[in-house]
Image (cartoon, rainbow, N blue to C red; front, side, top):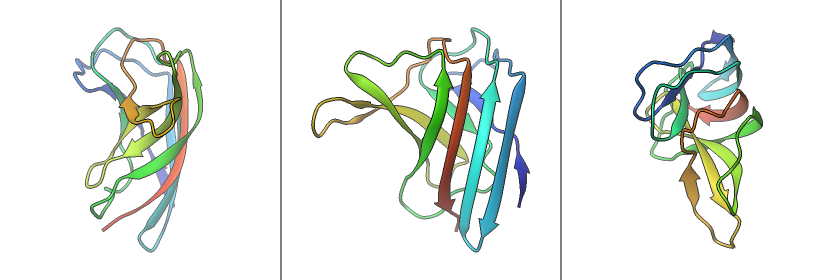
Length: 130
């Protein structure tokens, strides 16, 4: 049980983001890690590409991806015909990629493109470690 510091980035980040509040809490039971994190007052014009959060307390294990719930996001408007779906936790990395989902049946997940509009973000989830 403890805290961690989530870091907001983009896939082509130049480090130009500032965050006034970034905190994460976790509880590890065996190989399961339960976590929540929040980032507020995101600002800056740095970066392009897609949005992600890194800094999970333990690297996810296994060969599968995990999905965390996005509990709240302020300032972001989804791409037409999509909705904000989840944060995909990469296996063997301490990062979560924010993703949208197509409104059509059998739609695919799409990485959230960086446009500088996200003001705050809350994510919670569970994953396993090696």
